[in-house]
Amino acid sequence: MQERREDETRTRLLHAARVVFASDGLKRATIRKISTLARANIAAVNYHFGSKDNLYVAVLRDHLEQKLRRNPRDAGVCSLTSARGRLRAYVRSMLAQFTCDGDRVSERLGKLLSQEFVQASTRCFHAVIENYCGPSHTMLLGIVRELLPGADRQVVSRCAGSIVGQCVLHAHSREVIGLISPDMVLKPGNIDAMTDFIVEFSLGGMERLRAALPGHVPSRQREQLPELS
Image (cartoon, rainbow, N blue to C red; front, side, top):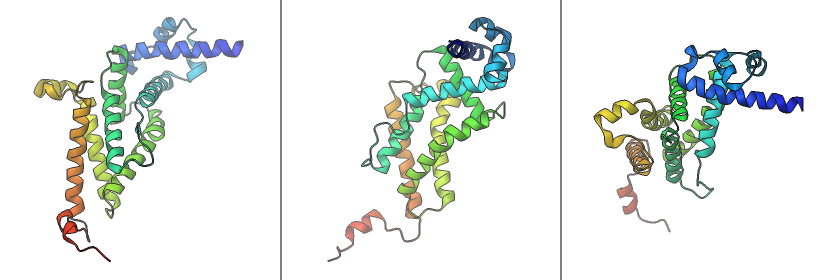
């Protein structure tokens, strides 16, 4: 019974912290305000999370986990899916993660999460980056290696970074995009079109790089090569 009450208190603190951090950010949010909203003792924050910073990281980690559960990087992918298909699933997953869902708290937490990826406000967040972004990026590197056989590590890494950069642009620059090119603002109605563009643009760039690799035979020449008997 005691353990159940403690779990309920932790859950209430986490839910209250979502609202407070979304409204006030890390610096202006107070443990007292969070505790009051959660109907919990102030000491409960330290008991369950250790500090306000740790609670902040827990909120963003929970938000990220929810986003990844709804939009896994390998959604719809199977062992027979081509590298191109896996790339599309990956890109669409990222864009879906950045698409506003009408929940203002979720939207604000998404912005805070994006800011942390640019410049972490607390060292505690570094573990979140390693645990969640590391495996995801490793998946993308594997896809790019398959699309660029023979490319060195630096080229593969730069291509993967370029793909991610095109996606996160929609998270970091939504307001600017809305001002200079409203049709590019990411929303549920255009997510597939934006996905297709990023994939085709990226594949075109990688094909250009692939053509410059030693031993590469252009597709037109491959079609003209005689078949081996």
